[in-house]
Amino acid sequence: MPLEVFSAASLRRALVIKLRHHGDVLLATPVISTLQRIAPQCEVDALAYADTAPMLDGHPALAQLHLIDRNWKRQGLRRQSAAEWRLIQALRARHYDLVVHLSVHTRGAWLVRLLRPRWSVAPKFRAGFWATSFSHLYPAQSDPQRHTVETNLDSLRALGMEPAAADKRVIMVPGAAAEARVAALLAQRGLAAGGFIHIHPASRWAFKCWPAARVAALCDALAAKGWPIVLSSAPDANEKALIAEVAAARAGNAGVQAPTIDLSGQLSLKELAALTAQARLFVGVDSAPMHIAAAMGTPVVAIFGPSGDQEWGPWGAGHRVVASNTHPCRPCGMAGCNDSKVSDCLTTLPVVQVLAACNELL
Image 1 (cartoon, helix red, strand yellow):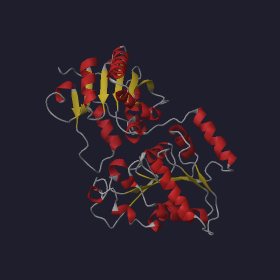
Image 2 (cartoon, rainbow, N blue to C red):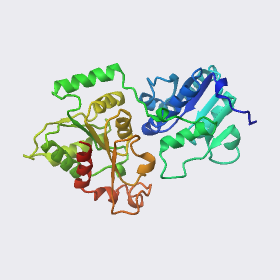
Image 3 (tube, rainbow, N blue to C red):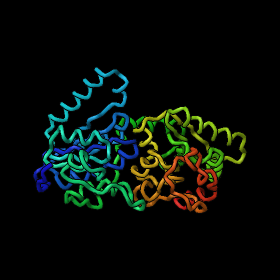
Image 4 (cartoon, helix red, strand yellow):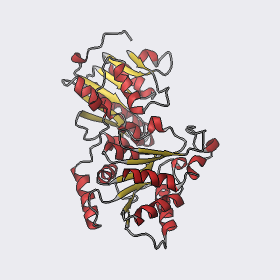
């Protein structure tokens, strides 16, 4: 594509594309904030998968949110084609001057060619069709010591837009309905804001999870100090099974003093955000709820195994990352040791190490 000198003052509408998982989408919100500050006259839209919409919906700098439903492909070719065509028409109607593509999903290259914005930017991925689809390219993540938020913002740096410190805040808006439901749930159980610890030990990826017995021991230790525990998980059967294992491991422990409330599978993502915003502390693994807690300003103890905590840790100050100091192989980026779905660096991580991090923040 011919290179035209970029001008933020010329922007009228921009589209930010993030077609990834929930946590990835949330960590892209500083790009939206930066665009809105540098080009306040510009309407900033976003395109994401429908299931990740709660991560962006309500963002104060977002004009429109366009969605791709992963279920389209299950509805037959005719319905899928119709849905895709409606999306293209809706995007074309916005007449974007800039498209910011924050992944190497091939759909982004096709969309840029269809929408024909004046400027477009994406990660350096491959030569040929990909590279010639965009007016600007920025380095894909190559430094494991650099956080994903900064890598996302490199897209704007490639255009000459430098984010300010305030722009880098990750934003999620629970909304009034979610806040009201969570307030009612806490009131029913006699819990006050700042008066409980929120523990979300589950992930869709089992190799990122700490063993249930150790989660149970941590719950017991914190409850013995008088801290009520609120447990949560997604509605997924495997995640709820992990919470059940935690409960079974704690059964009959006479030393537990404070109550435990099980909300596993009962909360939407917006309600999860509203809940964790009221917690004194959040404890969890490398997962979207951990990123949500950090975005809500709640102190986070994040338990990391094979994934890189410098790249994916809780964003912002005042958090703690707990990882094995006896496994020099981590972070390996594998789905468990030798892709076994079981991570030794997590199964051997001692409770005392996680409890110490909790005590520091409490």
